[in-house]
Image 1 (tube, rainbow, N blue to C red):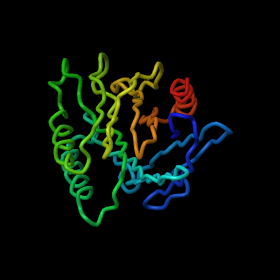
Image 2 (cartoon, rainbow, N blue to C red; image 1 turned 90 degrees about the vertical axis):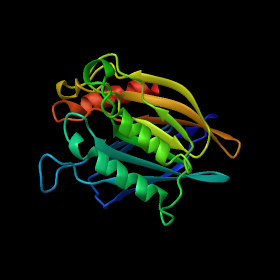
Image 3 (cartoon, rainbow, N blue to C red; image 1 turned 180 degrees about the vertical axis):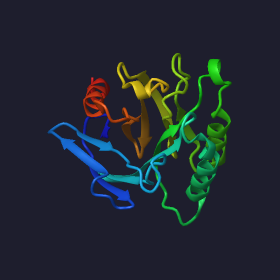
Image 4 (cartoon, rainbow, N blue to C red; image 1 turned 30 degrees about the horizontal axis):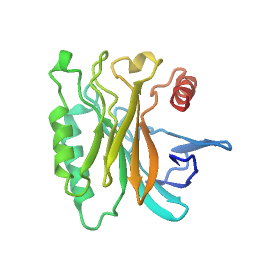
Length: 222
């Protein structure tokens, strides 16, 4: 993440529960890349719980960012999505929960309205409405023009959001064809500083996933 004037922030990444294999980073002089993956624990059909928290300190002013994969997949695992969303919103509104300036969520999927009657839109709308008193601004994924469900990306913010750009990835694995994955970009102003925020969910799956994710990352940065 960087500010609009290309000043890099200092990023501290913490995974809860702690998992040294969950986060890998590739850095150069201009940017840092984080690939976050989960592996099944007791049941192969379920992802291991992961709560990566990015605490970003940008020179004179600090702000907090939370990124979280809610796994509200409408084809696999969707039958528990409502419970997960309710648990997350209750936690987010709890007074003991730390305040975050920006929240980047993944896998808050909404189905293609032409195929499955917009399944998931009510759950996403309810999430946005429930936390509106604390996070009045939101940026949602565009409706897909192909695939079963949209990108699943959602940004919540305590500060005004100016949407900039959304774009689907030009390539993905066969297992991802049902999903219109891509990235969303917006500008958020905090204490008179403009931040360019990008929320994305890269290719999942096993076959050639690393190479596909690398190409998707190049698409984002260009």
